[in-house]
Image (cartoon, rainbow, N blue to C red; front, side, top):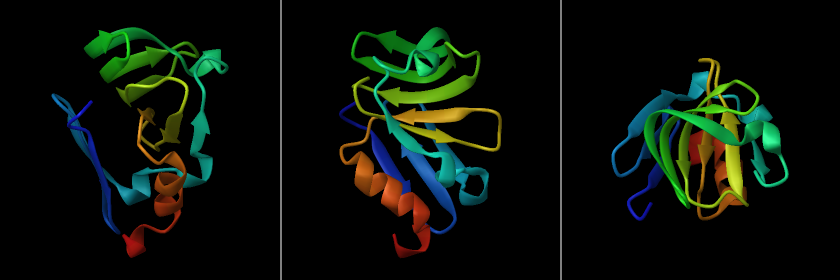
Length: 113
């Protein structure tokens, strides 16, 4: 995930990885439900089925099904500190970002970024 780039502005969240990228309109995000999780302790959010992507130890990117049956778009390298960001589009984003706390703060104030 050396090439992961997460950008947020007043209009959209843009995630670019090695192979998969996505732009999501701010109004489709649910930042009030976003949280930082440790997937070793929250088994319901653990990815269990890769539907379109790359799934290697320490590197998961693309579309997956979670243990709870939900669909998720992953950009993950460290399952111990993952930002889980639900959307209104019937999937969640699971992201490994360098500073998860700052990322969550930016989600709540995208006009400043």
